[in-house]
Image (cartoon, rainbow, N blue to C red):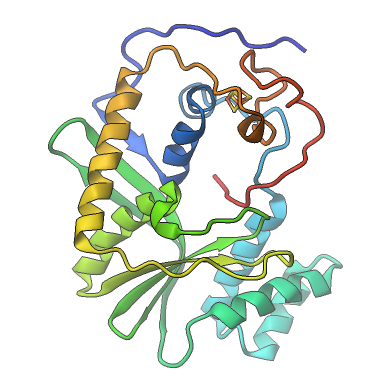
Length: 265
Ligand code: SF4
Ligand SMILES: [Zn+2]
C-alpha cells in the first residue's frame, strides 16, 4: 500500500481560534502526524482504530435509559435490551448492570446525557475553544457529577493525570460554577474484563488554572507546528487508524489489531 510521505505545511493552518476537544488534546499528545491526518486533513480512518461500534451503542442505550427512568428498574432495562441488544441480550444486560453499580443513588437528578458543552479561552493568546459531548451529568449533594463511559479495554489509573479528563474538567468547571456546584469527574469502565474504576476526581480551582495554561500551551504549539512528524512508537501506532499508510509508522504496526483503548472520538 502507498504510504504518505512526511511533508512540511504552509504557515496558516488554523484560523484565529484553535478548536480543541478532549480527544483532540489526547491525539496531539500521542502523535502530531495523527493530529494532522485526523484534525486538519480530516482523512477518514483506513485501519481499525480504538473505537468500536459497540461503544457508541452502549452510550446511546445508557442515555436513552436514563431519560426513560432508572437503570435499576428491571422493566426499563428490559425495554432497552429489547430495543438495542440485537440478539446478544446478556452482553448488553452486563454493560447496564455494571453501570448501575456505579450510578448515583438516592436523590441524584439526571441533568442529561451526551450533553454538548463548549468553553472559550481569550487571554493570554492564542484563542482556543474546548468542546465535547459529556456522557452523563448528575446533580447530587452539591456536586455536578460528570460521567465518562469507557467501554473498551484501556486502563487509566489517575484521572488527574489523564489529558482527556483534564480537558473535560476545564470544560465542566464553567458549568459547575454557573450552577453553584462542585465538580466531580468519574470514568466508568464498563467492559467485562475491567474490574474497577480509577477514583473519581474533584479538581481544585488551582488545578483548573493549571489545566487552562496547559491547554493554552497546546494550542500555541499546534499553531506553531509545521512538520507533523509521526511518533513511530509501536504502542501508539498499533491502534492508529492510519498505520498502514503512514511513512512514520513503527515497523510491524500495520499487522492485525491487537489492542483497544476504550476512548472514542
Ligand atoms: S502510524 Fe504511528 S506515526 Fe503514523 S500517524 Fe499513526 S501514531 Fe503517528
Ligand atoms: Zn444509571
